[in-house]
Every structure is written in structure tokens, then in C-alpha cells.
Image (cartoon, one colour):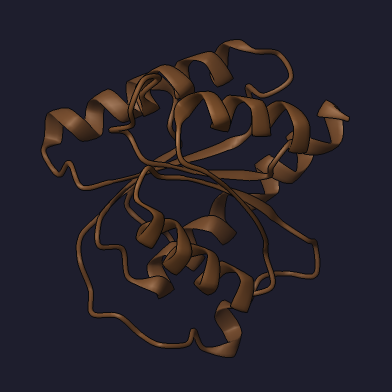
Length: 155
């Protein structure tokens, strides 16, 4: 299944079908969002799909967790206090240890310019909030292999 890097809104589906479960490889996902409710809902979904989830509320916290935990995939809100998502993506892409980590922008910004700016900063995909659970899981699956390889090189 091929997904467009820019995905619209589809109604919430409480539990993903079995075929949407991740492969056997454990995936560490860093969820970066300044809204606790967004982090909680995303953590619940990802953990129910078998992922290990770490969370950050700020850009600086995200950068520290990336260095400490080497996540396979980063779900990155772009509008954050202090260090924003665009700068985080740029820094990660410019760092030899994290340049191949999968970065997925998850943002309420829905304009074409916002999408292009996220891709130019180094994001692999852009999802517009609210993101349907099945779409989020599919995009993580699509990009997780790259992140797992980067994580192995990082350690």
C-alpha cells in the first residue's frame, strides 16, 4: 500500500485490524507533542499495536530522548514551545547518528506551504491532525524499517 505523504481526515477506528499490526521487530516511537491529551491518545494506540512509546512535551526534551533512547520513528508536532518541529527535524537530519531516523510530522497545520516546509526540514511524511489510527499505524509501518536500521547504527 502506498500512502501520500499528506493525509487528510478519516473517522476514528477503535482498534486496527490484525493485518495492520506491526511486524515482529519492536519499534520505539517517540511522540513529541506539547498537548498531553494528544500524547496520551497516541501512546494508547501505539502501545495497543505493540510499540514501545516514549513521550516529549518540548523540543529540548525530544532532543534529549532521541540521544538517550534512539527511537526508530519520531512523531513530531511542528508547533512546539521553544525549539519547534522544523528545527528539530533539521538538527536530526544534520546529525550523522540520527540522519536516517524516520520523522513523521503530525500537525494541525494543513496548508501546502506547511507540508512543503516540513518536508524541506527533513520530515519523511506529513500527517494532518486529527490522524485516523489506521493511517497513523500504516505510516509508521511504512517508515519503521529505516528507523530500526538507524537505531542499530546509533548504538
